[in-house]
Image (cartoon, rainbow, N blue to C red; front, side):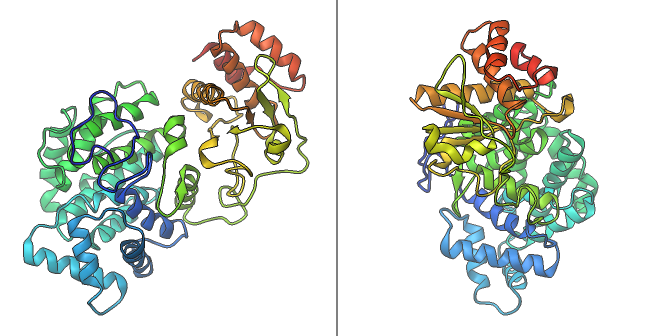
Length: 456
């Protein structure tokens, strides 16, 4: 946000706040705000391409404009404002206003439809035609130019492919775009592949916004499947300049689809927040519920708590650093008793589990680690373990006493405790002996333990 329509950063872009809002550090802008309007409908299990789904999205856009928008694109504001004066169902009013604007100006191919596309790519993971249909219908609510709809279709299909097949392919949806534009889109994607972000002109245009985002992704892809690609790609997207929040939102959505929540570094997840009062954990709940085609009430992630009264508390000081407390999910309810000021959670949590009582959202961070001893169950394991250890070191540098816990405290908690000790300079063998002595009931061993001690 701080770099939108301003000088690109020298070195790394940082979450320092400011921008056109102005915004707090880590606060998302209209790109994510509008995506959330769509996401809250998709997470309820409503078909986004149905009249009911489009009505719900249209009403959400209007309510956002009236009560939550911190920044609104000129075209989007004009369509939403004009639609209020028209008759018919909510989505019919928006679509008519969008078509009227296109008939009058011929200039409705802004990037405002593409930027809110990400969640559509998760809404029908097994049905590419449904994905494309929903992407185009939602684009049409404010952007009538076929190029805007095409860009949304291409990006939504790329996200679906990234999630289901684990690869980045922007050409996968070329057969789904407007037939008359298919050849041009193929040329535009080819021109952007491996190109320098920012060379395509004004990225307020949906084509050049897509090209800058794709260029940022492809120029930073080293082909090794590293989670660091997400950070490199986003930094490159911001350095493209001009409409930086939108290009980064577009690029970030596809990078996130490819690498997952575990690839997003601690310092970003700790800070990210925005309208309507959501944090990182809430975004995960919306995404998972959307991919499941609706919330499964009583099941993770749409459950109040993942606590289990049968799991005993642990609350044992780390043998190397006693201000790191090793625990189980039951220890989440003992924050005051344990006298901790920050929490690192290594297991699935419910909606009311985070932040824990007495904690702020910035003091309670989740990490994604699976106890299954399979490489595919823990993508980017070395990165995640390093990131969790970094979070512990960061909290300790702030003078905080920290609870680190998983569900039962016998696998993930000791593994992160081991990585933390090694990162402090303790020999792996000594660190392992110390942790086994402090936690005699742990499992240890296997890939998780080995990577914690020695790296990937």
